[in-house]
Image (tube, rainbow, N blue to C red):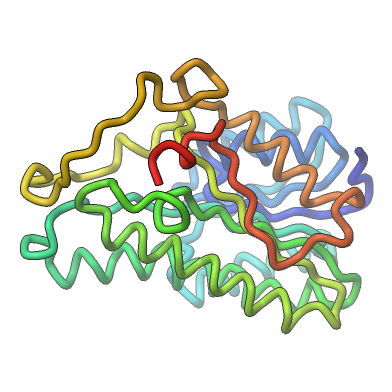
Length: 260
């Protein structure tokens, strides 16, 4: 699959799934705008792409900041004059806690970053996407779409469910512009996101659940990899997926079929 002459913007490109996808898209020939909330991580990914012989620019922005996202896309427009792929991947796990303990501020932060951030990532991309059409891919989760048994994940799961509804609305609205909008729903993937999760008093919110041995049937119980998710992103970004839109794809090794 080739993306020669195409341009992709990836949020959360500094680590994990975002970084793997940025590298995969670059190997396919796309110029990549590697956006991360820290300049250092964005620069590391862009540097790695350039070392591979690809084109990349680093962008530092908070995806929940409208002005910052508009500025990021302005830079893409100045650099390449087009945009073909948007991977709206950045997000947080936020605070996982029982409803009585979860503060309004904690709820709002998770929804603002994950759901409003997705809206802004898509909204400000449209002026660059509309001339040629393209592909928008949003990272949701098995949580909020198939799995509802993770105690305390109310804010996170709500934000992930909201992304799916948003994608379906956007897919229909943008179809006339030949812009496809799809959602990927990863399960247990080996990344660093759990390092940034605050969990409190989860025992109070848990329901007794007995799972079969091995959480992920396809991998003998272990997690998938960021590279496997990146393969799915590349497929949805390319010409092999030109008739796929408004669809969520679970990539979890059948994990959610056990835990739903």
